[in-house]
Image 1 (cartoon, rainbow, N blue to C red):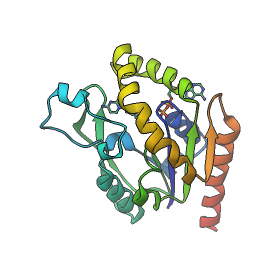
Image 2 (cartoon, helix red, strand yellow; image 1 turned 135 degrees about the vertical axis):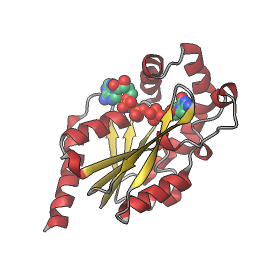
Image 3 (cartoon, rainbow, N blue to C red; image 1 turned 45 degrees about the vertical axis):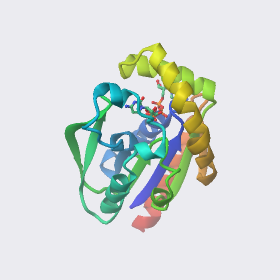
Image 4 (cartoon, rainbow, N blue to C red; image 1 turned 120 degrees about the horizontal axis):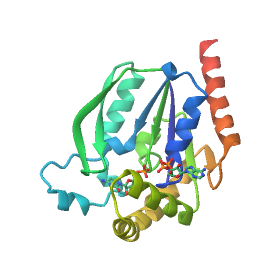
Length: 206
Ligand SMILES: Nc1ncnc2c1ncn2[C@@H]1O[C@H](COP(=O)(O)OP(=O)(O)O)[C@@H](O)[C@H]1O
Ligand SMILES: Nc1ccn([C@@H]2O[C@H](COP(=O)(O)O)[C@@H](O)[C@H]2O)c(=O)n1
């Protein structure tokens, strides 16, 4: 199995890059695990307490479970991926059963920041955009898709998101094999990454 880690700050365009890569590949060949689905389960906290958590610190992610699932898939076993809700700030009751496929993409802000998880990736990618551009994208997306208001996005940006980005996320770019700049639509980078994936699969099949 070819395992690819795709990191980058919030709003950098990770999901967009993954979706564009998927368009160039056979969907029967690829699984995508999203780090967002592995936020710790906090059933004992109230909604107001969950709102106040720092969701950009590595401690907020259940990396043990994410690592276990990556290793399980790599050893040919299916997993039940949890499903997270940004509206309730909580894991839902639902899971998605995932069968192993030839390619595994793991995407999320901190996937290159975790030492053990990083070791699992054959290709490490960092999606990079300026912080002002990312903030603008984040404001739009969180209001349109994640049920937030402007005040909440700005408060989170100043208190946790920006400092955590500087401490953990941006430095993890140093571990990347490929850096994709996404200040504009970047079809060349998508083509390059898709070719790397297709060529690696060809070599494995021969
Ligand atoms: N290269 C780009 N140029 C302009 N807008 C983009 C680009 N990449 C992503 N976006 C937009 O920015 C927002 C966040 O992108 P997304 O892929 O969800 O980022 P991430 O997964 O890194 O948080 C989305 O609304 C998306 O349409
Ligand atoms: N309940 C939560 C959990 C996480 N976030 C934010 O999501 C960002 C990561 O997701 P991306 O798709 O943008 O990579 C991260 O920056 C967290 O602040 C949240 O707002 N609420």
